[in-house]
Length: 248
Image (cartoon, rainbow, N blue to C red; front, top):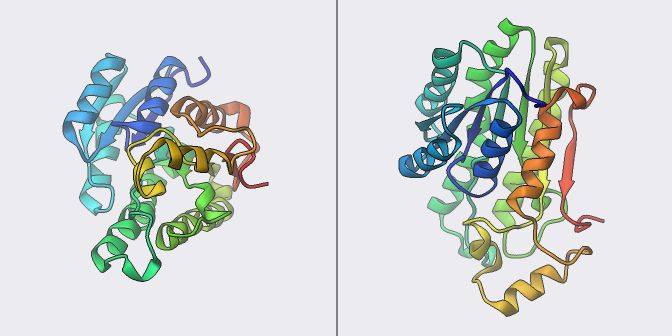
């Protein structure tokens, strides 16, 4: 029960890594706000968890979406201890000059601007409580970029540097800020990362990972639980590679 008594928000909690993180946190004793832009997905995950979870429909790229999920946590349980900024999108793997402006703007709105809005609403709550944890899902793309994902790579590089910048600035407030950097895994974004989804493309992708497989939601949830727990109380500004050796 490493998160016993704590309250967490998980964005993008309706599927993939986010759903696994929300479930793992609840099993570790936390009460969880499952936030997702797809209402049905958030509700499904929250219902599976039970009384320890509530669902919130939130567009994290917008001010009101972030306000809603913070208010849901504090209104229901009176506190907030952990914010997992996990929601993310990508453009399809393709030449950088062929990505549309609309896709570019969407990637940066969800992967980068959402961090601004999350901080605007969560940091004052954490300061008032005497501390907290922000956990950002970045990517190995921000460390060892793949061709065809130029603008997505850049958004995750920004997420990593924002993590480190926030960690330094918020340390006096006892707010820890860390990032997870998973290699691509079994999530709804996988086909976009690979430019399709065939056995051949999967084999090619796996061949770049020394441990020989993609990441799983369980891998990411386990790392998230550690970084969110008091066992990691002296870790801040870390970009933890959950990648089977991909970034070596």
